[in-house]
Amino acid sequence: MDTKTGKGSLLKEIEKDEVWGDVFRMVAQQVEKAFIIGNINEKYFETLLEPERVLRVSIPVVMDNGEIKCFAGYRVQHSTARGPAKGGIRYHPNVTLDEVSALAAWMSFKNALVNIPFGGGKGGIKVNPSDLSEGELIRLTRRYTSGILPLIGPYKDVPAPDVNTNQLIMDVIMDTYSMFQGFTVPSVVTGKSVSLGGSVGRREATGKGVFFVTKEYLELKNKKIENLKIGIQGFGNVGSVAALSFYSAGAKVCAITDVSGGIYNEKGLDINKILNEIKNKKFLKNIKGEGDFIENKELFELPVDVLIPAAIERQITEENADKIKAFLIVEGANGPVTPEAEKILLDKNIVIIPDILANAGGVIVSYFEWVQDLQFYFWKEEEIFEKLEEILKNALHEVIKTSENFKTDLRTSALIIGISRIIDAIEKRGIFP
Ligand SMILES: NC(=O)c1ccc[n+]([C@@H]2O[C@H](COP(=O)([O-])OP(=O)(O)OC[C@H]3O[C@@H](n4cnc5c(N)ncnc54)[C@H](O)[C@@H]3O)[C@@H](O)[C@H]2O)c1
Image (cartoon, rainbow, N blue to C red; front, side):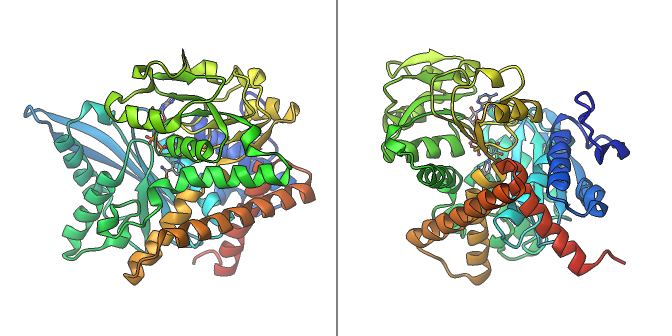
């Protein structure tokens, strides 16, 4: 592989357009490795690296002071070969077509890996939501929803929360879509309020899933969770629920960070107390007395056993990979480890449980929510978490077995499984026309 262009023997042939920035190139390199190591039929390679549909919309918003600001929004459907596109919507100043396309592709592979009947999609708006009032945020969301209306629908494309979006945003998307249909359509979006057809357990699903996968992996390696020190980057939906799950299971969560920095205490942090405090204090840097303040970059150098990046992509890079002391990295976020960093980590025998497995809990419970909405029949929380744990455990066992068969790392193995299932669907359906 050419390290400058990131192109190996398959990628060499492909020259791409604006979809291919740093993040999509990560996808391309990972997919190429899976094709080569998994002996996957090369004739499908290019098709899997071309999103099926890309929509860019303008989102003019009347601000509270009467000014008009215009934001850029995207919705990308990477593949619908196995079912409706499914994937979250992100509000972040760094959202680009490159990033949204990469996240959409990872969703296709993730949904196929855990074998739920969805394709992959993703959306985003280039905005810093903390600069907006609640009213502005709701108007932004309604206008974005009307812009992507031609793409979304219960059998077409079903959005969900991602970075900086939550139940409120999903409720607004559901209402806006329903207003255009003339009747209430809960199944158009997942991650809604439970009272509007959301699923119990959806809010916790991704963080709990990270915990279930890690616990099972450690049990297979005969390691006790109570003896381990954990470090987590990101204290939002995924990171905070994962932190609480590990803490509740008796592990020492020694370090947590968010965009403002974080807290380190080698004896372990009281996660319940910190969760209570952050409601008022908003950022971890404002919480005093629980441990030492750390900058985000310090997290990756700490003496912890398990490191869980659960913030945004491209956080573990060739600059910091060498300093990592953990023996296990569990990717709560999508794409937190660059391919260059991954090479360094694998050479040091550090195991990486990849994003498309580790954070699949969110989309699995989103699938349960969609099924419940389509049937207007709702399940209990125990049922949700029991089914979630079973799907994730089975997927982990399959990924480990495949990695042994192909003598490869867990990411490549997970991609071999996911990609093979998508290709199977494409082959059985045939290429239209
Ligand atoms: N929410 C889900 O159900 C879900 C499902 C699967 C994957 N993911 C992935 O998990 C990751 C986190 O998503 P979330 O829903 O928890 O988002 P969130 O907005 O709830 O939380 C993000 C957290 O990351 C922190 N953060 C942001 N930029 C950072 C930076 N540069 N350095 C350190 N911390 C930073 C924020 O302060 C916040 O604590 C994303 O990669 C997302 O794609 C989320």
